[in-house]
Image (cartoon, rainbow, N blue to C red):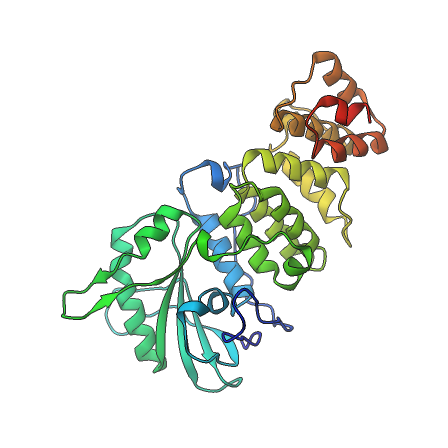
Length: 347
């Protein structure tokens, strides 16, 4: 499958323009799962969803790894990128599968000039490092071109570990992977940039979702997904909610529930409804059936709590008793930046 044209020789910080892509094969990424702590609040355990989400971004935009690693790749840019077979087993009975293999060539259908192995790594794993040599040799042998190894991780400690040279033992044989960690991924808060490269914006959320820019990154992704198909938009929104820290997640959920962002479909409201069904909302935990009004009211209370604003029992009852959606939407929009309860309810 030939994908978008890559420009590795572009100016630093400027991504190559994307062109229409044939959709990659549909991947099974578990989305109906119990609520997990966001990436910024937990150790990287049970990595299946986060691991697959990272790889899905690179499948959707096959030039993304090369764009982010271009400072370390000084060769001219091949013209096309395509996804290659990642099973590197030859004759030996041991099966070896890289996460993702990309081939870069001058022309569609032409011989590859360079192969890139993309590995998503969420935890330190000494045994995994020993397979990296095999991946490089296998890809180099199979495709008869230069091969590079790129490790993608949102965890700074894993990035530092992955950058440590791996010695084979033979004189001069040392492997230092190219590592795409938080320091190599820009903080994408601009909506225009997010629309131009939505996969980069989502990856930015995974890399920087525990920082001060988490809310602005989320807003940028929300703007970008309105132009995507519904399944892709739902997946990218799901990834962002999982990646950002607790306070940012509460505010972003509130913004989606309030209708502050208008989508081409009713995806946003159905996403929040799905979250309630999965137990992500407080009302579900209390065994209630909530409509949009009560869901928005509870999202408002979550935002106020996340911002450290103490709500009295009387005010809480006032919020939960409100059935006017326009009033609730006004409260929740002001709550996103409120420093006092008066900013929300007395404006």
